[in-house]
Length: 156
Image (tube, rainbow, N blue to C red):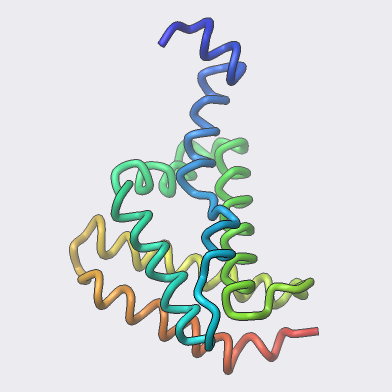
């Protein structure tokens, strides 16, 4: 690709890099909108399955993007990763029926769940310590438990 095209469409090589990180980490709204209607367990299992499909399909790029925050503390990269975690946290809340105007505490709890999901996926993809079925079970069960027993403590 010619440098002129990069500059035309993205501004700089760093802007292109940030866009790649953004694309690899952001949960599109169609992922949540396409969840099956039904009980919380089915929706939690579906959103976790969607996440695992995406990260396994793009494992090398996803792992590079999610660990990009270690790039010498680059504020721009960290901001993209933080924004992606916020979008994922809101998507998780929407998936379990708690997405309308979450309190700061509820959003914080959901961000903590997203952190668990990220690190659990890394255990599977990078370290081969877990199977996909174990990751699916851990994340879906944890999400339902948090939605039923923990998240209500932070609902306005």
